[in-house]
Image (cartoon, rainbow, N blue to C red; front, top):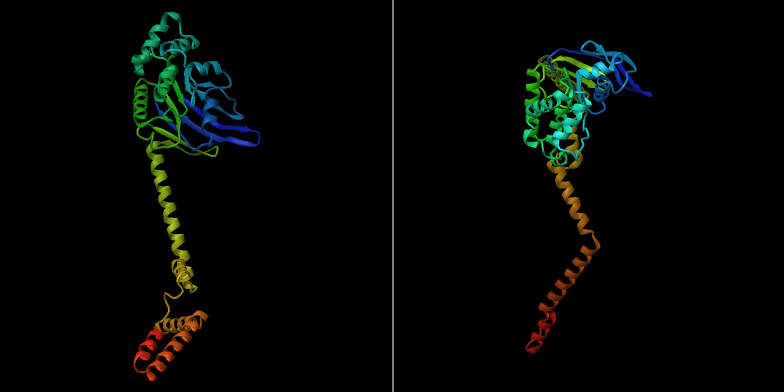
Length: 324
């Protein structure tokens, strides 16, 4: 249904997409994964005929996007990331306007809008203003808009972004229902875990290059093997480096750090006693300590003289009071 061959897109000197190739079979839910700046949105815009490729080729339902862009637009339903909406109209008026824009015949327009509203569960919101709706409901309206002309392929750029967990579950259930109706769904995201339970195939993009593409189970097993091999290599490298250091007579970095923090931790007992004696001598040689010792010696000398020459009678009491 979708074939991308050697796609390249450059902006000046920047290669946004560099030699990307993958295929999407009919009836699949295909996840297009990658971090910000990987080239996902650029690829999607080329598929939706909004950008022209620098080189390469994209075919949708057998039609080249450069040769017959109008034919491609009739076969796809495109929902952009963070699309704008007309907020001063009701939900019914919004869908009726885009049904006319998609050139749905007037005789079929009312029934088409009603069918899309029922499919996306918007019946209770049909008379409400778009401005009054939540982010999740606005995303649902955008998805309903892409279904008005009954496209074969849905191209959704991060449809679950900024949605709460409940809205994500409702969006997933709706996409599964569309797949059962025979739609081919191409959607982008940042995280594989969000799409693994409903996607059949996946492609991973990194810095404009395709890293991996294929069924979800095969890609998951390959990623698990890669993570395990990296951990094993990292552990082996760390162990080898420690063995080399020990062979050269080095201590482990952890013990070196402890030795720097507390240099007396591993000293022998005589060495500790020597350091303690040095500390006592240093404290005794302090000027304040010397003055205190001299004052204590003078006090003891006065006390000895007073005890040796105590006068009798009242003089004794005056002498004692003088010492106090």
